[in-house]
Length: 388
Image (tube, rainbow, N blue to C red):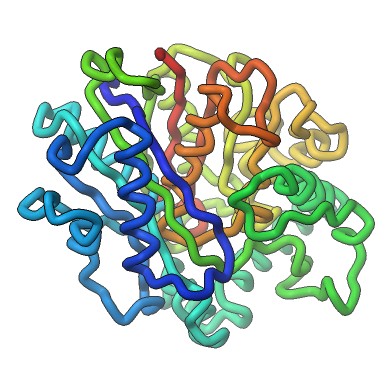
């Protein structure tokens, strides 16, 4: 890979009163360029990750990035979408522009405004990331889809409620120190494990604490060719960036295997010339706790059906052998769809440059990222390494 991340910005995630999709985009775009020490004139290409699917009445959004500064006028700008992996799709498009030598500097922005949408419509919008002929009538929307996955996992491997609660508790504890996180509260294992008025069942065996949050937010980063990046203030290189797309219908695959995730990790590790044991931490896509559990197995940390041991024994805790989601993950940080993948790359870069503050993993040298769209349909893995 020839691309490096040389600057970034990240908004707070949550219900952001007084913000619009446009204001979220323009703020992080300006801050990312400033962080990189670059100006609008230096930008060769712009990529915006924005899922939308009904969340915003403004559906043609690529040029909103140009509202940041008039000097961005006439720069090529494209909006990309790949469900909940939309942000990583934008990052990958930026990398490919640099690899093709079509651009030296690419501004990548990911954004979503979800909380202004009525609750019933939120579920309907998110369900568009599933295969509607099979899943279009699923109660509880996308949570219902993953509720079915959790139920099937429990039927095959036994009740894993303790492990799901441990994953939720871990991520909420990690998120306390993340200033960008939507929910900065250590809920504890017992609260996450126990059904209550504040933590009811939502779909199948999934409770409210098993589900990521509806969020507004944005993140941005600046990509540059590695030869030029060495002269910058900081440079975080892509040792690997892989994209694997799987079938949309769950009926065409073993949904408990997350085979697209497995393949993406295999390709990325091979490309980077490293193993999982070389990673300092991983940011993974915990849209629901069952997803993180299955991802442990798909990435190769555990055999099928044995991922629960990693959660219960603290292997993936922030002070464990391989910290997973030291940021708090989607569970605590929030999940503004288009922003999530960009956020993962920003927070991983912060870890590798020692700028992660309270969520810093001591001595972090190599970071892994897995961002997923749909139920393991769009699968993106990046492996990042600081070179400056």
